[in-house]
Image 1: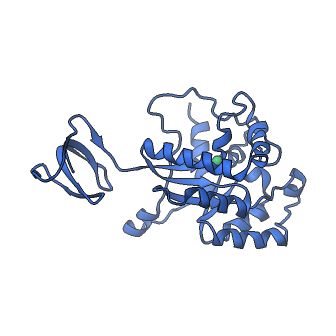
Image 2 (image 1 turned 90 degrees about the vertical axis):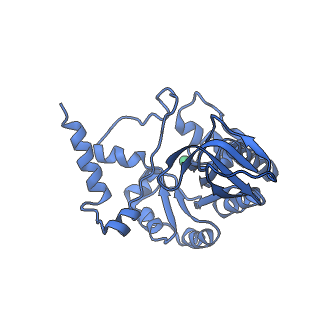
Image 3 (image 1 turned 60 degrees about the vertical axis):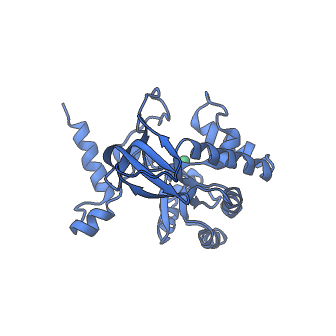
Length: 272
Ligand SMILES: [Zn+2]
């Protein structure tokens, strides 16, 4: 197939190429050149269309697909608290095959809208990870699955800096053999000792982190999620990765993440 007169965002730097032709054979992009013509291929006129690389959604919970908009008007804690939230109750009471059905629907929907890779914060321990893998089998999407153990601490335990009990420590190792890394709910349910243990894994580590900013700024109020009205073309989240700068420019960060966040936060508070 030849895509004719198509514009492209090309390569790592998303270089804009205006009105060119793309040759596709065997489901693979073969050639980009404005001079491509061929009588034996089907030609599709793509005048006015833009070809872009697949999108990456770096934070999903597609395991919740069955109860996406549940309790929209409730506060986050009663909706998604990992221990007593409404979501938890629904997921527990739904048959696995139905959860799989809705996960697969979400994958289809993502692909349709151009998302070709996603990073999922998978809940439900090893069972949750295995169920998701079942749902993802034979789907043409790329996934990074971050699992978690179903162990959450009370405020008291966090104050006493309680470590993760041994049986749960063992679960972490088994879990990580079956997924790409660990996705932690947040620092409100984990003592420093727990977080340190999670940080030891060599695989990917990720955490819901608004709580960290609250700590650094000394903010005493409540975090209000999704409080801004949705706007067109909004970028609600940016992922920062400095490994390329470290590799190519031999760059080394001068301060730690915590120190950097403190400096940034005081810059904003001192602005007149
Ligand atoms: Zn999340």
